[in-house]
Image (cartoon, rainbow, N blue to C red; front, side, top):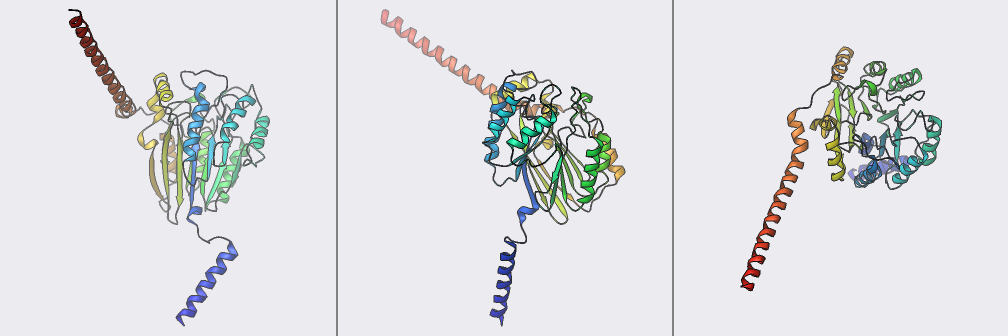
Length: 382
């Protein structure tokens, strides 16, 4: 009787596998594992500025691609805008040439440098992206899709094209699109990607999202986990406000020249977030740029803004009033502590000190050797 029951159970399992093609349960379906990279500013004809290492933009992206290819099991790579420094065909050609070496599919949000008032139009850029990226199957510069049953990804386009500005604004149709998507996917983890953040890593009015309040008011109505990833400010910052996580990621051409490996896992009662900060291996380029930017410590953020992990318990809902006040407070500028600045500079200081000591010893050894040689010559002559 026992053997017969075992055979029935095995037969039932085999039937389920053959009818679905895969196991009904998959841990991979619970987890979204991706890389966010922002503000690569690929340029084929520009020199470095005090803020951006444009002459090394291609080499910096090559290095990032090599690092990403060494990560196993990624679902995709999301570029959150300013892929190129100016919207020219040469820069886009170079950008997509570099991406041919990347082993994972890519998608992107558009930045203010990608769609220029003076160069290629929004429609022209969209046509280039659709031709060069087989994964970009969307008809517009904002879109939504579900890579897995537990997740919904929404990409928005706040770029202003009728004048030359670094500010952004989300048109009414996109705000309505966002609200509809959130309303229809309240059982999913929401990932929103856009170039300009609605909660700034630091205050810069000339770079801000002009209708950030309208965007945030839509978000705070919903209780499911929402993560918003952005770039634009070239700064590292992670803010948790109830069920919403706001993530600003640095530029690849400005110190700390880094990108993020993000892993989100959806459990029945909680969601876990894991952020790994990955910086360029081109240390000379990074150090040279650190010395030229004014506020490098602000751009690098605190340690918790770089590499961190935390858990959100789904039942711990926060009120709309709580989230609104937290977002308001988050917009205020905070000074970087001296201890954080020391962390960023100390390793380099130690390295320079060792090099200086090494050179000093070498110089002394050379002087000793020269003295010995001179003494030997004198003795031989005498």
